[in-house]
Structures are given as structure tokens and as C-alpha cells.
Image (cartoon, rainbow, N blue to C red; front, side, top):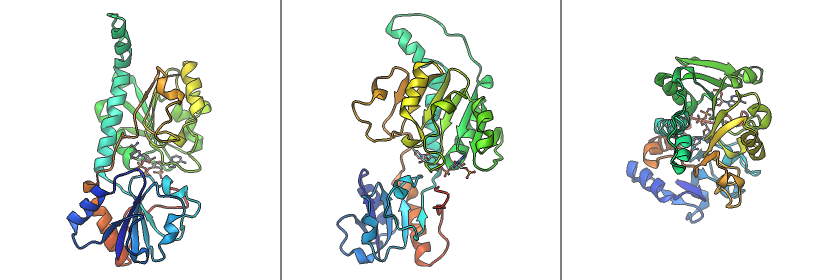
Length: 309
Ligand code: NAP
């Protein structure tokens, strides 16, 4: 029985090492060089080539190598009858919070403004702002969103969150569904997207919704590039509806050199590095799921494919 690692833009070697370190008896192989496709029962996938999963006649479980599964469901030939699991890792949530916190504080303390002033040798204090009167709105209160929401509330920000179902998180006001989206957006002077990419959330960061935010709001998208309508962001920034944006994810990655985001003065962009999965940290749950699959027991972190996350 074989575990195969199928990825096109990640190095599989640290994953093999982490799994073998936990259990040296595991047979872990790397696509496309497995000895016998028939032996593969469990695959770890990240941006696999479309259709390749059909090559494994005895496949029993597909495990995403990250928190999201949109890279799997984009495959028109995806075997929809097989269970799909994803990685849920406290380290992933912590490292995402570190990134978002750095960005929020950079914006909130106007370090971007001071950096620009420095370029002109301009000694000018900006008016002070209160953390207690600044509202952060988090779209998506799942594994990562709820962690960041609590942490921002602990620091003193006023935190509101938007999700499909109602949440009870200390210090965080919960809004749900389409009905409450406008009320949620109207308060968020810093908007952070931590939604999964589904048919319902694709393109949700659009001009119509930007116009519902308080004027001069700041956007942080660390979820998926397809949540954002790129032209709408540029329009909202140029018209001053948004004061700035930080983007870590893009429709096409790497972002093409000619994309207008690269040189936009109000955009801070990073190369999908907000929170990178550590194979050593997640290997135990991968092995646990492999064993559960072998014993025909319920899997950990199984994705609801109908819901899309
Ligand atoms: P998750 O646990 O699946 O949580 C998703 C949240 O979104 C849930 O609260 C869910 O509501 C809510 N949601 C889903 N569909 C919705 C809808 N139509 N309307 C309102 N709310 C909706 O996701 P996660 O693990 O926290 O990951 C969040 C995002 O971060 C994903 O897009 C992931 O790919 C991305 N990510 C990015 C990086 C990076 O480095 N940039 C790293 C890791 C993850 P319910 O709770 O009510 O179901």
C-alpha cells in the first residue's frame, strides 16, 4: 500500500521526510514516478495536473496539502465519490495571524504614510487613532478566521465576523449570510478575507461590496485570488473608496510581471506566503488519516464536497 505525493509547485521531499520520520515503514512515493499506480490508496495533492487522479484504480482517500481544497475541485475529472480531507493545523492559524497582524498594524499605525514622508524628508505627525474605535471585519470564521478574530479582540480592536452560520466567539460580534452582509461591511474599516473559495464566495471582493465599506477602508486578502475582482479593486483604490490593500493571493500565481498590482502605490503584495504549511507539523494528522482510512473509520477534517469547503 502506497501514499503518493502529487504536487506541481511544492517540493515533495520535506513531506516524504516528515512522513517517513514518523513511520519508517510507510511506502511514500512521488508522482509521476510511483512504481505501481495500482498500489496507491492515499494521495497528498497540491495543484495536481487535471485528470491525473484517474490513474489510480485503488485510490481511497485524497488529502489536500493545505487548508483549502479549491485546487482539487477545479479538476473536471475529479473523482467525486472519494473522501477528501484537508489540513487543519494550529500552527497554520498562528502563522496567518502573525502575517495579518503585521499588515494591520503597519496600516493602522500609518507606517506606509511615514515611509512615503521619509522619502521626502518630511517630518509630519499624523493624527492619532484609537485601536478601541477601529473595527476589523473578518469574512470567514473557520479554523483560521476565528483564531485571528479572538487575537485581534484581545489586542483591543473592535472585531466583527461574517460566516454562513452564527458563531459565539468572545469579543467578536457574529453576522451571517447574505442578509447581514451589508450591515457587517458598513462597519469594517479593515476588511480581512478568510473565506474558502466556493461558487458562493468567488468574486465576493467586488466594487458593489467595497462601496458598502466605510470610505477609506483597508482590504487584506489572504484567502484566494478568485475572491477578488482585480479591476474593481483598482477602481476602488483610485477613487479613494479604499485607502489601500494587502494581497497575498492572486488569480494567477506567480502574478504575471505585467499585472497592474505590482506597481500600484496603494497595494502591498506578497507571494502567497502568509501562512505556509509545515510538513513536520501536519505529518501526524496525515498518518492518522491514512490509518483511519485503512481501518475504514471516520476521517479527520473531511471536507463537505457539496458545500465546497
Ligand atoms: P474554513 O475552516 O473552511 O472556514 C471557512 C469559513 O468561511 C467558515 O467560517 C464558513 O462559515 C465561512 N463561509 C464559507 N462559505 C461562506 C459563505 N458563502 N458565506 C459566509 N461565510 C462562509 O477555512 P480556513 O481553514 O479557516 O481557511 C480560510 C482561507 O484561508 C481559505 O481560503 C484558505 O485557502 C486560505 N488560506 C490561505 C493561506 C495563505 O498562505 N494565503 C494559508 C492557509 C489558508 P461556517 O463556519 O458557518 O461554515
